[in-house]
Length: 112
Length: 112
Image (cartoon, rainbow over all chains, first blue to last red; front, side):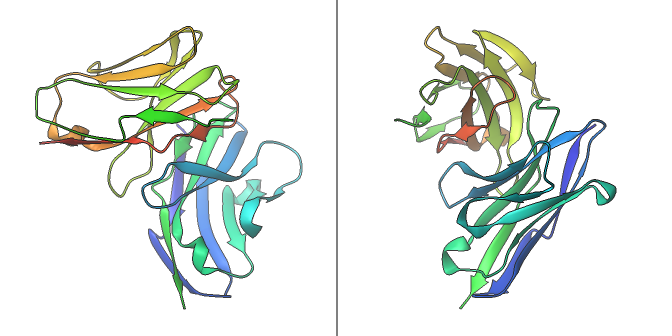
């Protein structure tokens, strides 16, 4: 069965500091991997996705993630946090493009 | 270009009642997926519709049913509402089952 584990339901970083949100997945077949962001009272917006090819994926708003097959990880990073990055972030896996399975989410808090 | 639109945005029902939620996909998309997002949780896959048929289904009881119309819009019906059905219901559209998901802002259902 496919699943996603996001380490840390809440993460706080100072404005300007590195953002690191952790995600590990399990999949019996090569997965597609995603990061979505959700702002309060809104739907989900795709930040970035990995399907095949280059394992370092760049997304919107300065975010990037690296697919590490040996570690079954897909951690999300941003070099310098901005106040506007405060939101809920969801890692998701889709085995071979099948239905998308989401993690429980990590709420990112930005400290001034 | 209108994105995914959902209606109603908020609604309140009582236990035992039935509810219908509606979704219009993004222009050009032919596939609609429905997700349930309970408070503090990640979205859970309910089912996916393509060519007016349910193609995939998550672990939800038969009280949850849906429909897709020839214009690709979709409805989610929930019968015999339970308190635990209170959640944000998200609709996502894509171009085929493996395409990138575009989410609506959701319909927030409260069951009293």
